[in-house]
Image 1: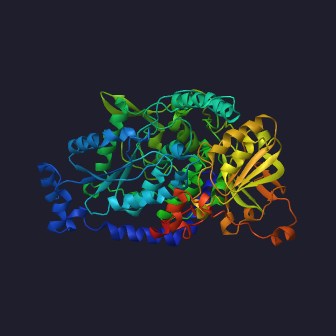
Image 2: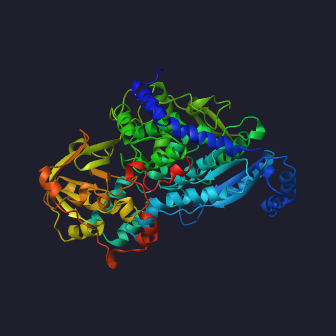
Image 3: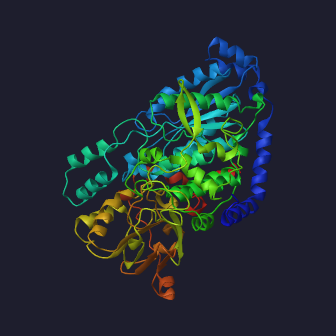
Length: 613
């Protein structure tokens, strides 16, 4: 199938825009490559330090430069359900490495915080910033010149983008990302949402709410809704950084372990010593970045990736912007309905045909670059993204691959490109005199996508929640939550606002949210213009908007306007954020050293990717 004209045009634009920065990145990659193995350039004292803790056989192999050495970089901790399964992975990987004739060392751990735990807390102000800390920690783990390839163990939110940015800083090393998989399905997502709204209305107790949440998030594994964590897994697969079919296999199963073994064996085949050298910095190119955007749009994925993908691309010397997302959104159909875009979870999505069906139908429609490099190139599954038409299964105790289903097993969850849920993508760009913002329309019913109403302005989500509890929001309005951008307080997610706004929408009021902060991968049924740029602290329009100003959010036309006389609006003094001690929480305080130096939302929000490009 010939490439869709829009896909070709956007890709050509990205290639042209990135010509100088990509060339510089690739020159640096080649300069990093050096001799093989890398540890061969180390002095004797350096090398002795590097393998002092190894078993005798591994010491001999590393000392004699006879075998490749695989770095393990892990986001394991046992508080995060998604990352708890990684506790077992290093032992599995080291055993598989020995069987493959190579060595594996645990190179380093990276921090992994949970947005689900920190919602509404000071720690949420560190969430987005943690991505860059993870990238730095990844680079530190790889900094010893001991390794010939790497396996990256991470799943959630800012963790996978951080690992990927760090991996691209050592882009001369081959790499495979190794997921842990989603937890089995628990309490249904509609029931969970219903009880959250009852609690917001005071009709359910905290015990009722905790019981429901505990039945939803009930075991090791990723949360099963289609938020940032599961969007991460989709992206790693559609970019060719996972083994085919690896994303949504439940943890602690025989197939999950077999895929971890297979990833180890495969990365050993990608080292320079193997003769099949494929460094991650060349694998991730302009076409694979465009494929990632297509996957995000086709599945109605997390809005957080309108930040992360910009930063990841820059780490590889590639420049994308929100206009690229917007143009592709006009051509890429919405093919998946997974909560909060529907009622089903990722286990149901996987059972319906999952990523193998999605990738296959997008390839057939000319909406993906099939001729990209992937970690599966040269295997029996084929070359490029054709390999990702195959699903993983267990054969004689080992991971094997077979063609995925040619038809969706449930068209209420997953559809072919010719019969989409919506002819355009699930994420759209809003522009107007308010600035530029992102909206996730895939979860918003068409009748709620256009709201014109007076603004009610708040400087924190807690202020809005207090007004809701006092009964002051029983009307049509657009909630404006400002001073939530990256320079102001680290751009926390404002997901706690979803239940009360949902209650008001269900009562028949026209409501929406406009903010320079974030929502989350779980952005729900209420229209939300998020990531508004410029942010209020940097001269954005939100600093001048006043309660009572009429705002029009049109998710269909892609516009966001403050309906106030332009001269009057420009003459208004800009409001300033509350910098009193009461507003200065732990998260904001720890973030303070970086606040003056961060980039804006449209540039990827605190990305230091330019340093790598």
